[in-house]
Length: 260
Image 1 (cartoon, rainbow, N blue to C red):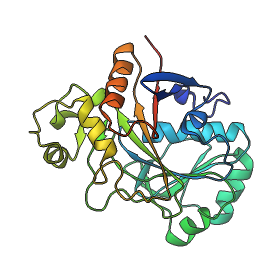
Image 2: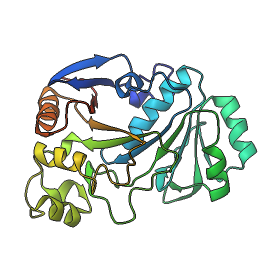
Image 3: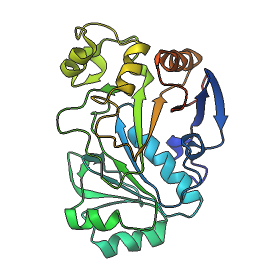
Image 4: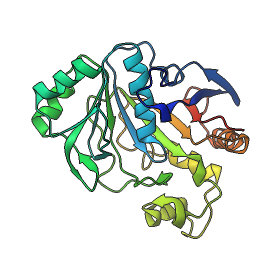
């Protein structure tokens, strides 16, 4: 992944979990079942790797010369990169897309974060005949979260929702690793000082109040267990899968840097 050098930090490995076994894939888009479509609308929600996941997909689509566009309905970090543009006009976005083959676009850059594009431009972008990837949730760079009443902000055009969980949260206190820890603790019937377990991640991923919130029946839903960088974290991913009661027929993808 990231073979074209767009984002070297996204050069990771991806695998599906099928029947409790890792099945390595050649790319993230293959693991997600998205390698066939040319113009998908993909939204990432949750915590612990949304931006990296979308960067990886953008690099893969750019490798295939499909000219992906990445936007946000909440906030997205602005980077000093030729692929990023803030407060663009439609023509500026199209010109950058023609030049670079990939665009990350948003409004402003308050404290380094871009906001959603203006409504008219946002609507036009979702009509582009290219892959459109949307960061549709906020987590303040923490590995797990519980959504507030207004979250997530999924475009109604979404084809596929990627529900992301950072495995580094498992075994740590809710209060230390969660965005909106009080809400998460209440949902799990725990105290903020208690530890997050694989079963907790499975419960979040399955719930229409959490990972599946605002996901319509017309949208594909994929659980991404990110930060599976070590053997221990990959075992944790299998424990999450094993705790799910709908694993057959659902897609669970594990991503990370294979370091040990």
